[in-house]
Image 1 (tube, helix red, strand yellow):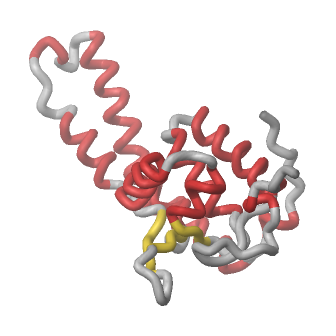
Image 2: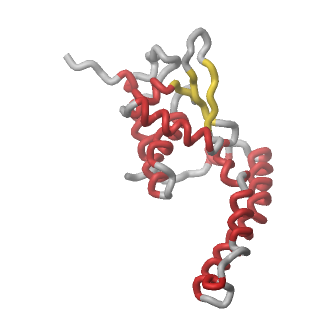
Image 3: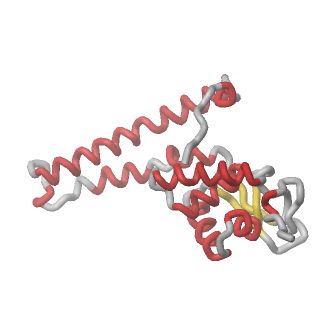
Length: 185
C-alpha cells in the first residue's frame, strides 16, 4: 500500500504547524517558481517563496518547506537565509516549540522598489572609472548608459510604489477581476 505524500492533503495538519498545500497548489507553485527562476531569481529561494505564497495559511516551518519541496533541510536553510536577507520573508516562533515558522513580509513584492540604494550606488560607482572606461570610449558609453538607466529607475520607483499603493487603496481586488492566462511550463 502506497502512503500518499502528506503535502497532497491540505486538510491534514502537519506536525510542524498548519495544513500543507495540496497537489494542485504545489504544481502551481512550481510553475510560478520556474518563471521566477527564468527571470533570474535564484531557483531554491524562488521555490521556497512560491511554497509560502501558495500555502493555505501563508506560513510554513523549515521542516514543512523541506517536505513540500522534497529537498534537504540544508537547501531550505539556504533559501530562507537568502529570502530573509532581501527582506521577503520573516521568521516567527511556533508556540510551544523551538521551531520557527516563516511567512512573507507585508507587501513583500515591493521590496525591489524600496531598495533604491543599490541603484544609487551603481550610479555613483560609474563616476569613478579608469581612463580606459572613460566617457569617450565604447566601454565608457556602455557603462554610462547602464548608470543612466539605474538613475532613471531610482527616480521612478518611488512614483511607481506610490501609484501602486493608491491603486490598491482604491481598487483592492482589481487583480481578482482581471482575466489572466494560466501559467504554462
